[in-house]
Each structure stands twice: as structure tokens, then as C-alpha cells.
Image (cartoon, rainbow, N blue to C red; front, top):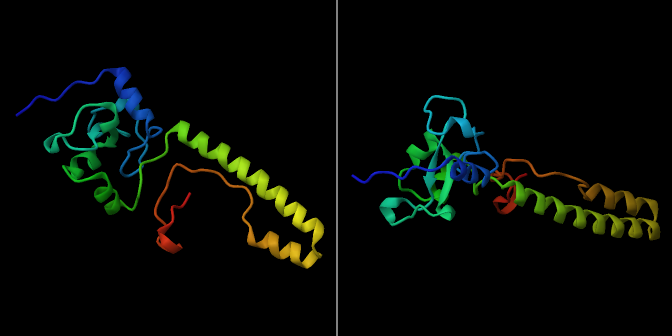
Amino acid sequence: MSTRRKFSEAERKRILQKTDGRCHLCHKTLYLSNYGKSGAKGAWEIDHSRAISLSGSDRLQNLYPACISCNRSKQARSNKAFRATVGYSRSPYSPAEKERIRKGSSIIGAVSGAALAAMCALSPAGVCLALLGGYKLGGHIANNSKVCKNKPNNKICF
């Protein structure tokens, strides 16, 4: 039996930040201070995305935070296969990814808002109200990205 590598506090913090402090499989909130403390609220372990038994490595891109329950249940299965059993299609967004999406959404919202205003200025009132009713203006990114079972093409819900 091989011995497991010990991760430093800095490495554990960096791994936990990859998913904004959430289990990369079930999206449960995890706490840095509860690393390896089975039974504690937000307890977690480091999961190897590609299992060591399947020639995975201890490199950062292969390491993700997982609650103890998910990590031990997953065993050597793929992330995609395990996430499907808990209703998710991807890991939670990192803080940097959330910010990138927000900035992109703001730009898209500003451009589409300006286009909608221009169309309303040139249209009769009834057409303008119909256009406004068809758009969902605003929005935000939540921590969850569950697969929408009732949406066409199983699109991601925010």
C-alpha cells in the first residue's frame, strides 16, 4: 500500500479556492479548517480527479476539494459519472471565473439593453411591450449549476 502525500496549508487553501470553497462533486460548502476532520461541518478531503490507481498525479490540475462523503463514494469513477448521480454537470465556478462571467454578462446586458431601447424608440408601444416581455433583464451567477431537467437540451441553471 502506498503512502499518501501530505499537503501543506497553502496547497490546501489553493485547492479549496478552485471551487470557491465548495465540494466539486455535490457543491456542499467546505471549510478550510475542517480538512480531514470526518464528522465536522464542512469537512473535506482532496480528491484526485483522475485517481492515482488510474495513473493520476498529485499535480494541482488533478486535485479538487471534495466532501468526505463524496470523495469516498466516488472511488475511482470519473467526475462526470459521479456528478451525474448527484445532479450536477460541472464543478462550482472559482471566484475568478464568476467575475469573468459577470463582466461578460454586464457587457452583453448593456449592448442588448441599448439595442432593445433603440427598437422600442422606433416601434409602436404594443411591439415594445411584447419585446420586453420576451426578455429576462438582469441576473446573477449563483454557486449552483445544476442541470435543468425541465429545460430544453439540459441547459445549465444558474
